[in-house]
Amino acid sequence: MPIHNNDIKEIFTRVADLLEIKGENQFRVRAYRNAARTIGELSQNVADMVEKGEDLTEISGIGKDLAGKIEEIVKTGTLKMLQDLEKETSPELTKLLQIPGLGAKRVKLIYEKLGITNVKELKESAEKGILSKLYGLGEKTEKKILREIGRLEESEKRFNIAAAEQIADSYIQYLKKLSGVNDVIIAGSYRRRKETVGDLDILTTCEQDTDIMEHFVKYEDVSEVISKGNTKSSVILRSGIQVDIRVFTPESYGSALLYFTGSKAHNIAIRKIAQEMGLKINEYGVFKTDKKIAGKSEEEVYKQIDLPYIPPELRENRGEIESARKGKLPNLLELGDIRGDLHIHTEWSDGHFTIEEMAEAARERGYEYIAITEHSRHTSVANGLTPERLAQQIRRIDEINHKLDGITILKGIEVDILEDGSLDLPDEILSKLDIVICSVHYKFNLSRKEQTARIINALQNPYTNVLGHPTGRMINKREPYQVDMEKIIKCARDNNCFLELNSHPDRLDLNDIHCKMAKQMGVKIAISTDAHSINGLDYMRYGIGQGRRGWLEPHDVINTRTLSELQKLLKK
Image 1: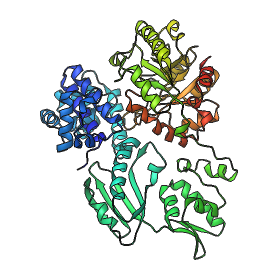
Image 2 (image 1 turned 180 degrees about the vertical axis):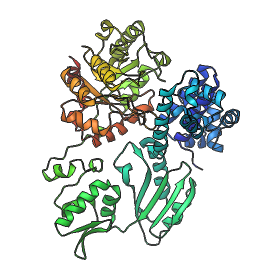
Image 3 (image 1 turned 30 degrees about the vertical axis):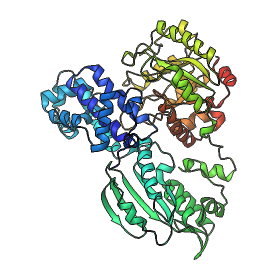
């Protein structure tokens, strides 16, 4: 049974959750949370490292004890420590922590006072008004919990793009090992790089005598075979995601790829154009009466209806067809356009590596510059920097830059936006930085008017450069806070500020709609990773996918600029 990094991450996260609910030492809780984050960010497959006998303690933040637990998970598929914790409480208890407004203390209270161990029981209790009678809750919190349970039930059906990618890559590599298999690609929302994926649609071409369907259903991660046919099969994997595979001839592969990539709205619009031209488009090709005239490639299909190739990320029927007709499709951003990462944490706050190590890793990725942006003092749980510690880091970065070749480290901070919109650090220290990112990290439940005013106040600070993860959402975990994005974007434009597209797959904030809105309103974007480790730098590809969905071109993104060009943009 294959163990993905995400499986290990989820087990360590559940351990940390249950330890926190039990009221265990916070340092112990944090050790498991940090390990979960580290493993989740690794580009190497940890199971492969175990199989090769590699020393896991060489992974930053992974000591001998955690390394042993990782090996146990890889070899057995589970962790005895987690099983013991779940016996003491309930395996479903950690899901309550996914509900905004229910921290560890409240979950512990609900568990001890009402005996509630899962979301279903919590929902029933809230519907009966029992929950609101507990000290510290109330009717307002009870109603909010019911709303969030509804959101949680819906979100559980989808996987974030990084988790889907791990699952997809392993399956694709397995299928390619079969002799006679030619093309293999995943279509659907995955190919359109949507931030969440409901299922995986695999399209393939292969030699006639290749029994790919038998090979497909025998994948060791399969927990249930839904159907198995000659040209289509469906399975459910251990993770719960459904995977479908379809086999096509090379002559139909392009039209099938276009059809199953979607979106549905894009496909309907394409078929309507074809009908007006006396043509029919389906997954098998383009037909004029009964004669097939195209289908080998997507370009060939689009050409039949007088359109250029439209990149998958744009296929949402949001104006891409009209732009294609006018020859005005955007020259979409690519990963190779990025010259640096402007949101990075190190061991000075809650990161896992030194400034030098992060700079070296960025240089190896071909970057010209990075910005070190620790948390500020209000985020005490992340060891946020006081003005005195930030001044020390500024001096340290100057020392490192003096002896560093091939890359420049910019001095920055991710400063908390306080409830009144002021910044967590004084202007005196902010004025000494190259870049200031301001972010909301608490008080997510303010009204739309209050939250908007709060952020606008922060953007009006003369030293603010970038609004970090602008809507505060955590995919499948926390809804965006209520804010008027049009007003925020206008304020950013008027104050020469930029918006961040945070590439972390749990955030991808801005979303694609707001990226396009910012572009149309003349506000540029900083695509950054919020990396807390070396491997976190690789999250940039998710931000690029989101930016492409938002129609971003290289000139719309500030960290495609050379260092000197960027420095001019950051000077207000």
